[in-house]
Length: 104
Image 1 (tube, rainbow, N blue to C red):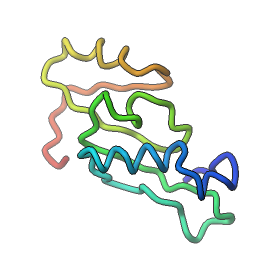
Image 2 (cartoon, one colour):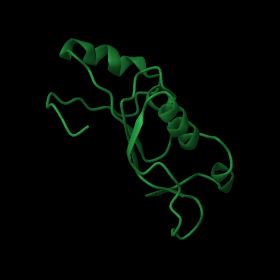
Image 3 (cartoon, rainbow, N blue to C red):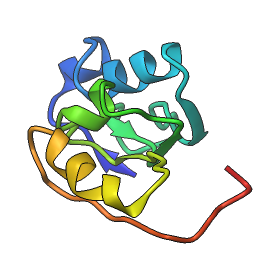
């Protein structure tokens, strides 16, 4: 879990709350987290969140959420990896894997 930067994040639609909601509306699937943690020391804690079925046009992929949010994006060919890595404007982190995960 992680604390958000300020109390107003709890009522505003920025940044990880909005990114998660918009991703789900566009077909993303929350596998874990996706909400504030009700029993945390303060009301500013966001649960670690994993979202599958994310495409590069979604805000959660293309923008920095500054929260514990991990978007999972599929690819058909390893040749797509460099362009996917460059398509986000921030480049704060990325990882690729060749393993097929049928549980997603």
